[in-house]
Amino acid sequence: MKPIGKHSLLGASGEISDFQEILHYLDELILYDNMWDDGNSLGPKEVHSYLTRVMYNRRNKFNPLWNSLVLGGVKNGQKYLGTVSMIGVNFEDNHVATGFGNHLARPILRQEWHENLSFEDGVRLLEKCMRVLLYRDRSAVNKLQIAKITEDGVTISQPYSLKTYWEFSAFENPAQGAIGSW
Image 1 (cartoon, rainbow, N blue to C red):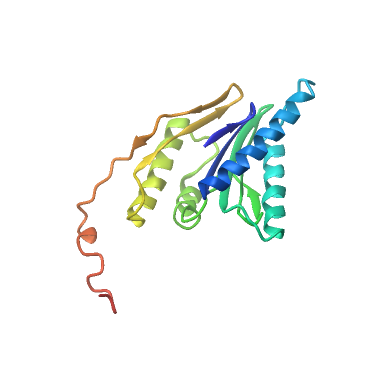
Image 2: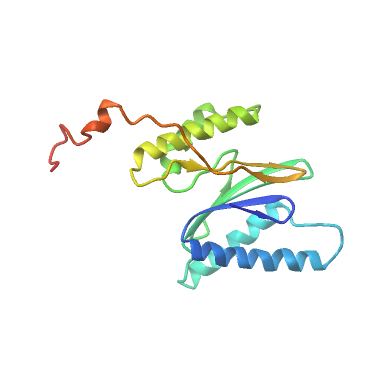
């Protein structure tokens, strides 16, 4: 995750070197925007739109940046959350995810998210989603960071570990009874 300008936060999954390239593009964009010195700064909608064009352009050159991006922000009281895939497919919604999160976490978010969710309840919901994802991917790490975006700026927590329970009987021999398993 990385703060972008004054109003946005960018998160990514995928290739780290491609994410660094995207951050380089964004640093140039923010620098160019600041050079106008007009008191205005790019908001999350503008940054998201720029990222959709970058990802789609690289896709058309058959040299995609292998990342899925999530951009959130607040500017002038307007909250924004959007995502962009490596081929430029993008949308905005009240909750977004990348990778397996689209399949496993978004159904939980659709069921439990509501407009008046407090920050603490939102963190608990996110931890629930991340725990489900962790239990489904044995190579995942149980550490995460939480970011909070307000009009005053972006704060990112220190990494912390999720509490997990690995003593479920289904975890002892997951292939037991599976047809055709080794």
